[in-house]
Length: 124
Image (cartoon, rainbow, N blue to C red; front, side):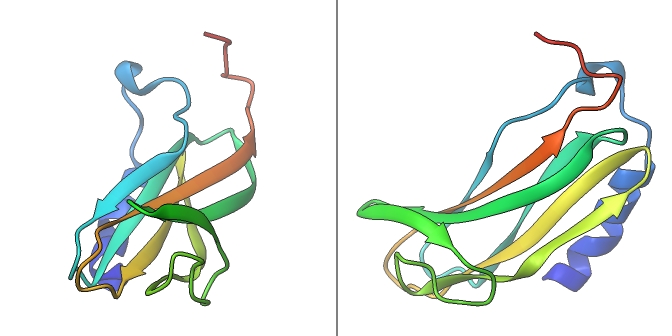
């Protein structure tokens, strides 16, 4: 899954953002249906943002919690595969792969990126 997604994410990082894409987005939550093998979760930041850290989480209908790369998440039967990959270019793309091994529980994978805004950032 990650190998198939990487060329597209690398191209996204190298492309210039449109005017509609100005600004920063908050945490990204990706639904991962029960029985799904995995999903790629990505966050896009302007190229002048300085990425300083991340947080992994997994959530389902019974709760949620933090996750550590390559270890089972606290909700069980799920994990993030390695640390995030960072693609830099006209913008910065932070992405990672989340695996849901549960056959009967859908999960939400949340990747939060911590960063310092660049000179182009303006308060909303």
